Image (cartoon, rainbow, N blue to C red):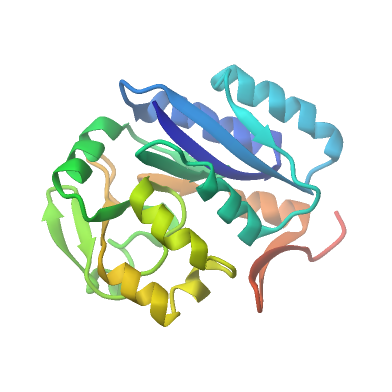
Length: 238
């Protein structure tokens, strides 16, 4: 079995597209145990039963946690705390997987190289193949994997995580992970670990697509930076 954790907000159509892509393209012999943090923001609360129905259709044994308020950092922490298996998949509800990922192969690589803490899945909107500043920070690891050499940080979704790495980092997450990554104690931990990015075998640079941008515009929502980190904020009436 492998735990899969997901941060989500109330947007049934977006969630359905994402879950359909995961069910189709996450290839593994392991049973996937899906756990979702569903923050109470987005579309009407009356849409929640539809989301539960959609989730149960694709992952019948999934667990959905509904906190009383939306909090990006708390959702991140809560999800990480729920990984109980040796490896965990970390996802967001608007990340559509565009081609197959053979999880058992990637887990084999992580088992062969014990200090790999995380394999990030390349996103179309932030692909290291199209951002010159990103590419100089990486070196080849294998045919479809690059290793980050400069600027290691606590990585978010979409990714494959090692439980041991999570256990070391979790006590230090009190703010947005990018902010926590600048702390001296966290930097020392990150030095111990190796971080890879999987490009995909078919559509390099388009492995994962963020489909939430247009939805956020339609709903008048944005992720806004605050001292604590990112928060959801209503920027206009819908």
